[in-house]
Length: 326
Image 1 (cartoon, rainbow, N blue to C red):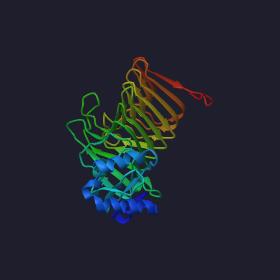
Image 2: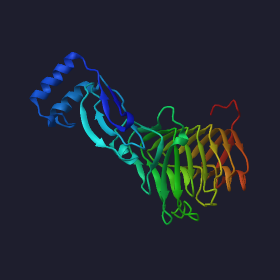
Image 3: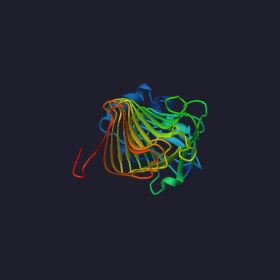
Image 4: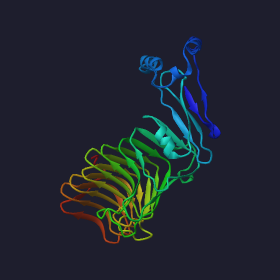
């Protein structure tokens, strides 16, 4: 089955065999409409019997200028309406999404205000095919007197082809003082993939991944400016923290108030390949803490105000040869 919402209105197109049409018609005569709501006994039994044979992912389209009406379908092979949801924001769409869903964003600005969005289920957020990432802006505002977060990721999430901007925040705040804000925070057991995403902030760290079970992959992205224009003390580019692991490929990290890419705290590890880092006010690439390691291959550093390569408290930065596959 296919779920499509062109022009901001929900529509559903399904192809059913004649036998299924007959079955559905008889069912509607016998049962009232409530019996076909998700979770009711007749519907659930049917879903369990068919789910293993017919599993189909479905995408939802969200247009900033004209919010759609979402008509959700089951994954049973039957075209059964679960609910109609009037969706007015990205937050609503994420709340309504089910694991495995893809939310497609049309051209426009999606303003979260000061709210934090928690991504705690396996979903993909992406620009519509053919739409440039600069035409899809997701923006939020950080507080000035406390640590703010725009996105909290605790599940497997993919974000593709959009521009994310975290405005506001505390210029003098730091991560250690608790008032340094974070645009995207991946907390264990979260796994985040960023593809062709642009992240900019006024004072915040762009991306922080924390915990031994947390991981992030950044591919063909652009990170920055982050705190550069206001000389913020909290504006890291990519920070891999507290035993987390991060891989950064073919990505530019530039105009960063602190370090560009850092493996920070004991056991944290990062791999950077084909990246361009700088300018940065502190370090270009860095490792801090026992067993913290950052491995770099074909990483170009320029306009770093303090240290191009910074190692603290037992952390190590290792440069790999071009033929090294590690």
